[in-house]
Length: 234
Ligand SMILES: CC(C)(COP(=O)(O)OP(=O)(O)OC[C@H]1O[C@@H](n2cnc3c(N)ncnc32)[C@H](O)[C@@H]1OP(=O)(O)O)[C@@H](O)C(=O)NCCC(=O)NCCS
Image 1 (cartoon, rainbow, N blue to C red):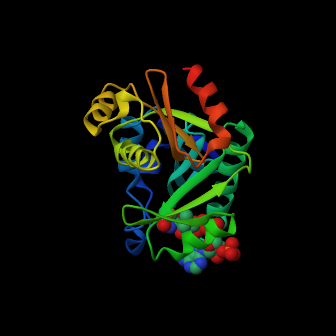
Image 2 (image 1 turned 60 degrees about the horizontal axis):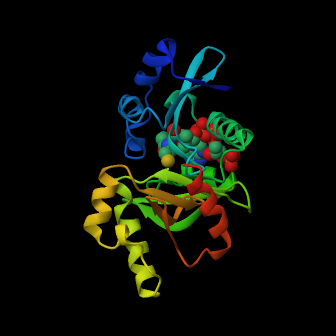
């Protein structure tokens, strides 16, 4: 069993790969995943799962070196190939590949409630629910270290809720908010211009940086120095 980036050779077998009708609610069609791989080409890593030259499944990773996290974005084994150990081997192989890079502190994924086969498989590999949901799906995470580093990414529209919440919390705590971050409108505009950096720890937003100003959540005083260093490197 091996993982191989989807190529011209594996594209059609991947697109045609079927799961049972009852499983269709658990994962998007592969053609949709490949379309998203085009749309999010900086983050998406779509892999064919191969046994010798036969495509037995498909996996897509969400590769975020800035945030220091990887998501198991999609995972499926064709119906005819299920229950033969391919799912477990493919995930183990992906986790080894992720660990070997030494660029990541955490792996995350989400599953549709009721998908107990997938859930139990992930749990047996060390993933645990973290109490969060992504839409209607349950989030599971697997920490790769107990000494995570500060990650830094360009904030986008999806991060606005977390960023404004962080500013609100810090305001309530009496922290002085740097002026370009004071109002939601200012923040929104700067995010739109890709000027805001999001600081993270294990994928969680812990601060933001804008025009050299840093606002770090008071809950993480021990990483302040590291966060400042990361911002300087921009
Ligand atoms: C989840 C999935 C990827 C597992 O792949 P797989 O190749 O069948 O899994 P494996 O053969 O490696 O088996 C892993 C474990 O799941 C168990 N398992 C797999 N299919 C099962 C089933 N239909 N019923 C009960 N147990 C099942 C196996 O017995 C094995 O258990 P064990 O390791 O404790 O002995 C596959 O079922 C699938 O593609 N499902 C549809 C899409 C999906 O749900 N994707 C996950 C989205 S989050």
